Length: 419
Image 1 (cartoon, rainbow, N blue to C red):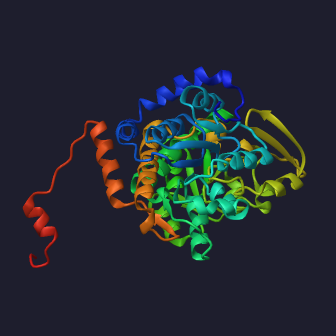
Image 2 (cartoon, rainbow, N blue to C red):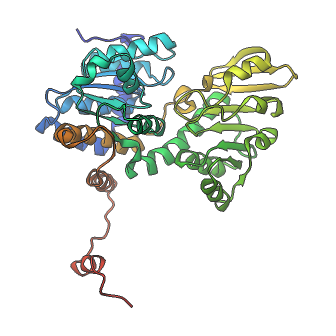
Image 3 (cartoon, rainbow, N blue to C red):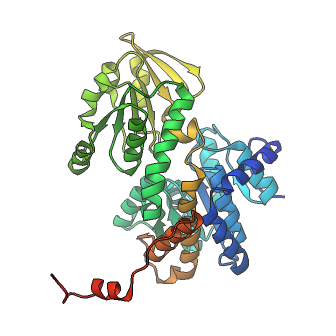
């Protein structure tokens, strides 16, 4: 009997078909799975993964199992689980899953404990919650750890803080920092899926709206690109002068959140920090303003402050909460302030997650082979892995590129030749 805690195992057949559909757009991961099946590089490895339980993650979990790993999977966000996928992984793939869409805080952390009951050698995280739990509540398991990987910006920030303070007890590879991850997943994946989530939740027209985006990192750049393409007027808020300047050069208005709050129609946060839309902003907003979060944790919008400023609250449609402020204005919070692209939609398209999860699979293999050489710190994805994933992705798309000639290689390696 496969250990699990999912909503309804009877959803498995629906989930299986959706996993197959996603797999059609994940050729790089498929090629890795084929090699893993033959070579078994993860044989005997116990791997605990705390990731968004989606169709794309299912293909990653099956790839890891094909490589010989025993996999326990829990959710990295209470609203991101696709219940049919969770059921299929248990019934059809023989993988233990502990995840239910909409689970409460207590259940979320119980599921992390369930995943850790495997006594893992490798952790695979999206937000660093499983690493944090290991270092605070399950320290006795740290002796089993060879290494880990981290999927997202927020998690990498947490892990680097741990490493700098000398409390990180095993090496972790920052998958998020791979070029084949953040240049594509963060930008094109987040851009498309965030707009998708907003539209599914609200059915509002993007064209003609004043669209405020907090932050101008790679995720925000993708959101701005897609919203602009749909006809919105973009306002960027930033604390980093370099990124603020970049947003100006990209043709967007840049201003403080307090000023943007007065004129925005739709607000999206994607910074990884707390209280980006803060207490004073809500009373300044237009009647009917909509706001949501595309950062990892539901801390970017000051929801507790919003509740205190409101005289009533109601759910007006799925993933849309209407807050009536004491000044009479009504404002709308989407997806409980959690990741809107996974709360109200299906997350990133499979084609872009193909590269992100190829990084996860290959970095797990790298960690198993090289952990003895690594210190207790956060590492970048090896350049060789990044390059190989790029090569495989181009090959799957039927695209060829030029190859340096011997003369070109010699020129690039020399200093003598000039004008």
